[in-house]
Length: 308
Image (tube, rainbow, N blue to C red; front, side):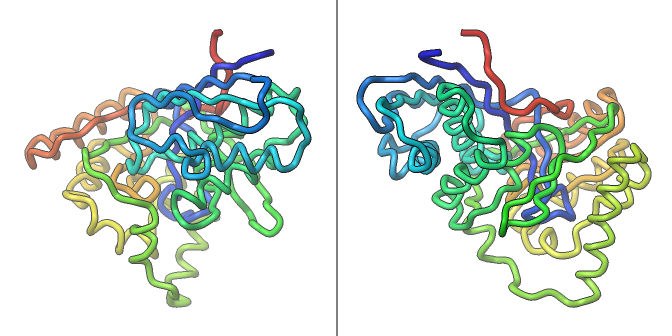
C-alpha cells in the first residue's frame, strides 16, 4: 500500500471508577485520517480540517506519535498525514488519542505491521503526553484494541481486553465548552483516604466482573466514582441533573467521560440508550446550553481501515 484511509474512533475513558486505567471505544463518532508514503524521509502534516491545530509535527499529537514510532524502525522513505477532525479537541471523548492512534496505526499498516498493538499504544502515549502533560493510555488502548480495555500497569505497559456485553450501549452528551485535560488533572487531590480507595477498588473489580459475566445489575452497582468525579463535576454545568435524569430514564449509570465536559451513560439496549440521550438533551435545552448527543454501540474492532 502507498496510502491508507483510517477511521480513528472516539473513546470514553475512566468509566467512572477506573481513573487512568479503564476505557471503551465508540462506534458512531471518530476522525478520518489519510496517511501516504512519500520519498522524503520524516513526517509532514499536510492537511487539517475541522479544528485549528498546529501543522508543526513537534507540536501536533499525531506528529509526535509518528516520530516516536519512526525512532524505533529504519525506513528510506517518509509519510504525509491528513487529519479530518470530527472529534472536537477538549471534548472529553479522546480527540488527542484519535489523532495519535491514527498516526501510528496508519504508518504501521503501511510498513507491513512490524509493531504489536501494545507497542502502538506506547508510541501514541508520546502524543498524549504532549496533549495532557502525562503519558496515560486509557483512551489510546480502547481506540487500538477496541471494546473495553484495562491498563493493568504502565511499567511495563500491560493492556487487557475486557468482554463487551452484547446489549450494552453508550449515550454521550457534549456541551459546547472545552475542558483541557491538563487543567482537569490539576484540580485532583494527590492523596485519598484508605476508605475511599477500598470502595474504588471494589467498584473496579465489580465493573470488570460485571462485564465478563454480562451481569447488568452488577455493572450498574459498580459505576460509581469515589475519587475523581466529586472534584471534576464542578467544571461541568448541570452535571448532577444530567446524571440523575440519565438514571431515572433507565441508564445503568452515568459519569464524566475522560476529563469532561462530555458526560456518558451506559444502558442495556439501544432503545433505552436513545431515551437516556434525549433526556439529557432536555436538561441542556432547559439550561440553554448548546450541545451534541451521540448514541453508540461499543466498537469492538477499534481503529480500522476504510474504503480507499
